[in-house]
Image (cartoon, rainbow over all chains, first blue to last red; front, side, top):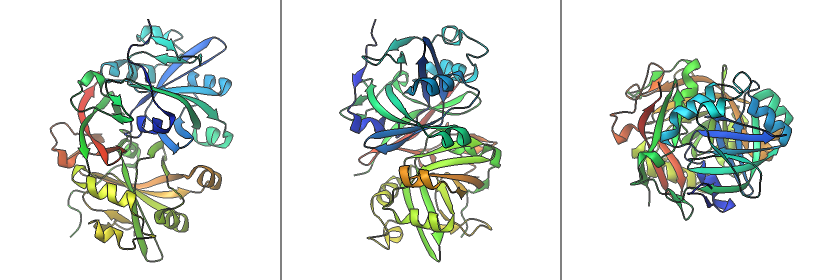
Length: 191
Length: 191
């Protein structure tokens, strides 16, 4: 069954999916191998073309897939996914090859892009790696250009997050440490 | 009068100040000139020594001060500072030399560091620029090493944010676009 709440986001609005600082899940695939890991250190980098940064430790299997394939996806887990998000940021496929199944991660393919995405998220961004070997080696810092984006239209509409009145189940997660997250909270609007 | 709620944070815990994705105000000084601007694109980069990234547009006066002095500070504005945060991210000292006074920004000096910090924030990180000319030119991306950090002990204690039960006035801001922010919300803890 395809992801139910999965609406395209124009590329020029895609930076807004990351602007409020959510924790992400990074997914990638190469040569038939797929993996996903959590990352608190992802950030928008540019508006047009939209670019992002994400920090990927050398010990992670997902990083190897990103380097081999030149592509990755960032997606925003929601409150019900907190335990899953912690688990796939802690366990590695290097030592636990079935970590996705074990932690209940369900994948689906991005339309026309053959990129694994994680079900149940609030938004998804597919990125093409912009190779920067020095950043990758010295800082574990990866830069990507966003080539496609989608969001759950119940909370992201007309280019804006609409979390006010949304149930906790649809809110993004913001990780601190030690299994502690915060959900995104109330809107504060300046005229 | 010194900042009242301003408690040192150990450097090995300082990444947690940025981990949940808050919008920051970037401050810097050089040759007697001080300035500050808002930035939604700041992120932790490493644990030890703690490092951060921040995106600073070439048109900003603050960037010139960072490049000239090799130092900057990141600080986390709170909900009552939303209008100020939007204003100093919109107006530039290049065309409005008194923008800080006009928008009600009050500065104080970081102890022993001669770095201007913004009153009323939830946390402050003073950073030494790690020069990376290619990143700065190609991506407007600056890397800094955190050399000192403080937080408001009413919301950050023993190395953890403690926002539950905190009033909106002490919560961090997470910018989207067009004057719209979200306050950080409720705690979600995974055992």
